[in-house]
Length: 120
Image (cartoon, rainbow, N blue to C red; front, side, top):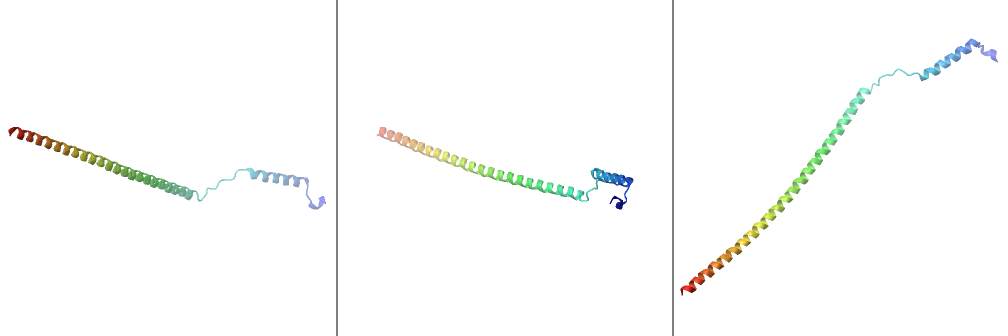
């Protein structure tokens, strides 16, 4: 059976060496070929970053607008409360002045009546 293959010692040694070289060649690093999509991938990532940045910018602008609106509403309510307090103070002052005017008129009338009663 051995004779059918007609292999000698040297043939077996060279076959073994070739097999060993092929096995070692699997582990050697291969030359890196640049990815043709690399440039487009970088552009795509840059576009995605820009889109995300714009979304964040819009969200921040919306938050600032909402904050400004709520601040304006709060200031309007505060202004209305202050105006109501001022109106209440003015009304109270007018009422006090009216009372004092009436008291002054009553005192003046009393003096007038006293003077009239002394003259008679």
